[in-house]
Length: 181
Image (cartoon, rainbow, N blue to C red; front, side):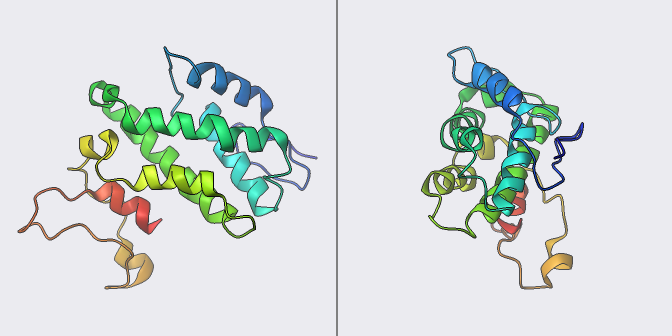
């Protein structure tokens, strides 16, 4: 049985969900004066990575702590990160960290939807993450894509593309990245 490495990556068959990180995350998210860690090596990132790994093994619903994270803590964390008016006060580093957490969320949902039952709660969080009108995407609407998706999917085969600049000046590139991920 191997544990998470220092970056929160899981390996080995018998991994344990990072319960200590879940407890810390709950104490920071489920409060009026919240402060959500946004780096991959911090609690939210570690819990997302561990949940994705457990989902890949088909074990995410059978691990009580993983289920608690996905059902309660994670939705509230993303709700606050995406819809709070505080978004407009945060600096670039925080926004980039949230972008990375959103990519980890997409990875988790992609793994979890491969099994029954359909993860309605996770899909609700994904819906929130894809909402172009939430505070986070409104604040970052001028960002361009971080990746050339035509190289990944082939020209014309992307799931999403930025609007043509002549019609709309807001590329919504980070949202395009999320959909293509």
